[in-house]
Length: 378
Image (cartoon, rainbow, N blue to C red; front, side, top):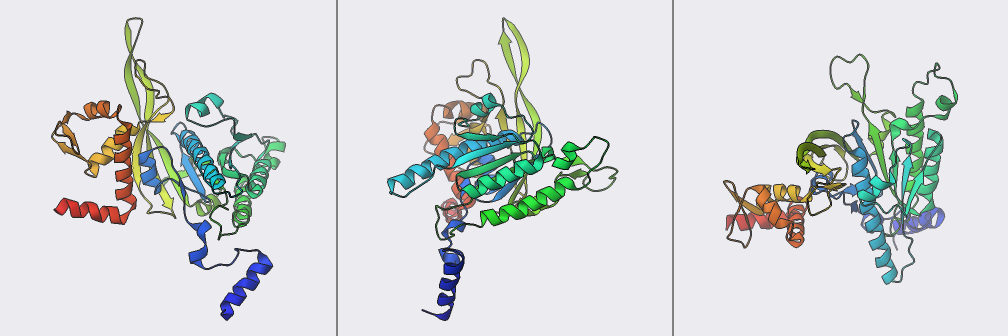
């Protein structure tokens, strides 16, 4: 045993096993991701929201921030259950991680959460009276080891206690930023309190939601700012800017009367910062907040997965396009127009999943990309 090995052993004995290790042994630091439920968002974020990190979703009102966060929670619950079952099969003592929603806005809607796929029976809801209480609860839950993801909705609505107790005429400049910066310093210690040689012992994922505000008197540059200070921008590994795109309108018929009805919207996303994958990626996805009458499948609370899979698969060459016709591999028959192809794929989810997997492989796995380039040159 070398002198350095003896030093490392002594440090781990003093400060806890797995505190100081070689990078190759730090299995818990490998970045795993929670799928977003959208191919577009997975590509923009680098494969999904990184686990055991702080991520931030920011945007204007009604842009889709909460919908994205609820979708992430729904997929996190599925992933935690699969991981728990896998560990139990191996005979490893495991804890089924829970999801926590800190509802500072007081706007959590159970029916809407269920429509987005959230298992509300295992979701923990926190309704804090003021900001410090919300962040103390988040810190305690983080250190408990029982929680896998903690969502704070939203930073802009976390009211410092001093501000909540005083009259409206008294101003409290910078109190929210001071409170949030202290919180980020505290959770860093909580998230580092783990044996990094154990891949099953991971800190929870922190997902923050925030709202853009306008700076006063700004004539040049970006007038947008985020309440809560600069600490959130440094603490977050991923920052997503969300904007509302065009509305999705369809013609609905009721009692013989035809009228236009808005059933969804385009959600535009831009990855401002990403410490786990290449940043500055953007995309847009259709999201439905209502069902379409006569449509065979449920749409409320769903991304238009078929639309985005066809768009990306066509872009990367897995679906061949010639004029207005689209061709799938192994099929001589073409489909005239994208809508015709989507109509066909609705009955073949296996083909859709295969196309989705091929796109993700091509984007994130260099060896798959090189193989595809070789096949193109043959």
